[in-house]
Image (cartoon, rainbow, N blue to C red; front, top):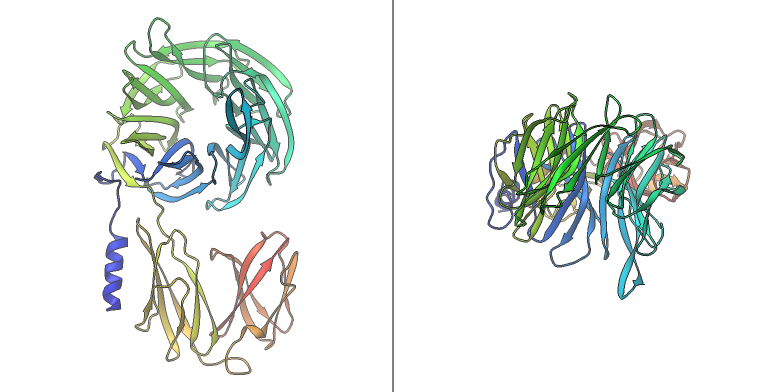
Length: 560
C-alpha cells in the first residue's frame, strides 16, 4: 500500500509541470522567451547580472491583492530554469534595484519603507531608507541592513571599490531631492555619507565605477543631462551638461562613454532612442537617433559586447495600447546592425541586458491578464529566438538532504535539512516508510540500509539517498549516548572543546542548520579536540561523531 503511495507521490510531484491558469507550455529550446508566472503574485525584474554563465536578478514581488512588496533575488541556471528564488520584506514596500558580485558575494541594494509616516501637504507618506542585502554565492542571506538618508531615500545604484560598498540614490526631506551616496564596508557597517552632483529632478540617475577606480554620475536637471566624474571620496574631477535627456551610461573598453535615453519629439507624441558617444573627458564624439513617428521607443539598458558593438534593451509603445520589448544592436559608429521585438500583443519590457558566449540575454517583466511576471529572453547573435514566449511556474525546485544519528540500539533519528520542500516521503530501506519531517525509526536487525528521502513541491521532486549501518555495539552500557560527548563551553564564543569518554578515534563532522558541512576531522580523543570558531556565524550547529560504525550527535550553539 505504502509503495503505491510512493508511486503516486512521484507521479504527482515529480513529473507534472504546473503552469499559470489557462496557459500552455512550449517545449524547451536553445533560444527562447520565457515568462515565469504565478497566479497569485506579481513579479518584476529591475536588474540582472551574469556570473559563471548563470543569471542572477533582483526586483520586487507582491501579491495581487496587497500594496506591500518584497525584494526579489533569483537565480536562473544556464538552461533557463529557476534554481532558487528568495523574497525579503514585511508589511511595507520594499524593492531591489541593483546588484553586484564582489569578492565571491552578492550585494543587492534597494529601498525599504520603515513604517513611520510624515505629512507632505495633504498627503501622508511613509518614510523610506537605503536598503542593502548580502548573500553568499549559494544565495544564502548573510545579513540585511538599512541606512537613513533624509526622510525619503532609496539606493538605486551599487558599486564596490577597494572593499568599500557604495550605494547611490535619490533622497529628500520634502519635494526637492539630492543624489546621496552611502559608504559601507563589506560587513555593512556605515563608514560615510556624502551628497554629490546637483539637486535632481528625477530618480532616473545612474552611478558607475570607471576602470581607473573613479565614479561617474549621470543625473537629470532642467531637462538636461548632467554628467559628473569624481573620486571615490567625492572629489570633483569634471562635470558637463548636455542638452538632451539620458538615463544610462557605460564606460567603453577603449575609453570614453556611451549615454542612452529616450528623447521626446515635441511636434509628435512619440519618443526616439538617443545614443551619445563621449570622449574620456565627456566631449561629444557623435550622437544618433533611432525611432519612428508612429511609436515611442523607450531604451532602458545598454552593454558593450565582446566584439565592441553595443546591445540595447527597452520597449516600444504601440499607440498607447501595449508595448513590445526589444533588443537593438549598433556598432562602434552608432550605425544600426539589427533590431528585434518580442512579446507581441502584450505589455512587456527589457530592463537589463547581458551577453553570454556570443548570445544575448534580456530580462524584465511581462504583463498579461493583470498579472506581471519575470520575463527572460535568450537570443542568438542576431537577436532571434526559436519560439514565441512560453510560460513556466514561478517556483523553486526542491533540494532534499538529511543527516542522522543513533541514541539507542537499532534506533536512528533522522534530521531533515531539505529546502523548498512541501512534502516528504521516507524510505528506510527495510520495507518501512513515513511522511513526517523528522522521523525516528527503529530497525529490527543490524546491517546496512539504503535510506532515501523524497522531497517535493509543485515544481518537481528531489531525492537524497544514503547507506547507513545499524549495529548493536556501543560504549559502556551497550550503545552510544550523547552523554559520552562533552562540549564546552556551549554556548560558545571563540572556541569549543570536544571530549569523548571512551578516548577512541572518531570522525568529527559539524553541520550547519541547512546541512552543509562546516568542519570535518579525524581525531584521537585521548586528548580533547579544540576548534577555533571565531569566524563562524552565530547560530545552531550539529556535531556528529562517527566511532567505528556507530554515530553520536549533539547540538552546538555559537553566540558571538
